[in-house]
Amino acid sequence: MTEKNLAQVIRENMKRDNKRFWAGDNISDYVSEEDKAKLIDEATVAFEGVLDTLLIDRETDPNSHGTARRLAKMYYNEIMAGRYDPAPDATAFPNDSEDRYEGMLVVRSELRSMCSHHHQPVSGVAYIGIIAAEKLIGLSKYTRIAQWCARRGTLQEELANDIAREIEKATGAQNLGVYIQAVHGCCENRGIMAHSSLTQTTVLKGSFKTDPGTKKEFFDNIKLQQEFAPR
Ligand SMILES: [Zn+2]
Image (cartoon, rainbow, N blue to C red; front, side):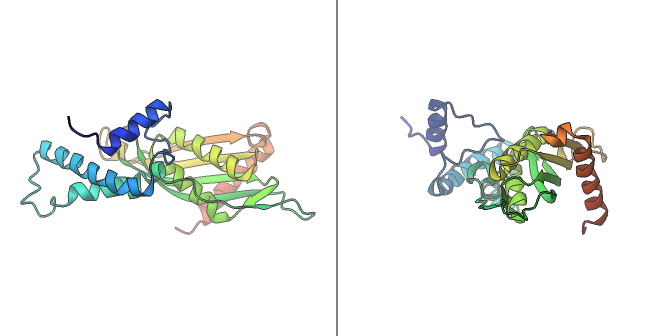
């Protein structure tokens, strides 16, 4: 009997616990730092098999020689890192003094993601708006959280929901909006080969949804950011 590989053991653990492990799910509770090196070894062997099946000579083609390992490392450490890494630490500071900030805060976050259907790159920007609640997090944390959600296999619609949920968790703000504008490799590089693959998704919660004034302020802020954002 062949010994089970680590990926198999982890999959069985997740199934036993009814833990969902879709491409967009974070499974950091099941994958330790030490596991990662072993999983990269296992994924390397699997990618070697894919390259062999694609009839690419990875022995004599110098450019394909280390490709299987490069792919394995890229998936674990980069393009899908948000599945295996725990949530970024976003220390919250109290926002409850007399002169607390009560206005709207809009942060523009660059995103790199990957569509879970075709594993093609998705790149774009998320605008995250909140009305500050009782606590605040550092400005860079909004982007860290958004990127952590994005570095998985995603659908843009899901990604907008995920970012909204995680920002809500980290800030306690119930009034918030997330607007994403992104181009999709799966539309540009294959299929319809369309250059106009710009896709926009919006998630609005609380007053962003119910109060037209707040909603307008959010989109006015986005427009200002789009006009003046350093390119
Ligand atoms: Zn796709």
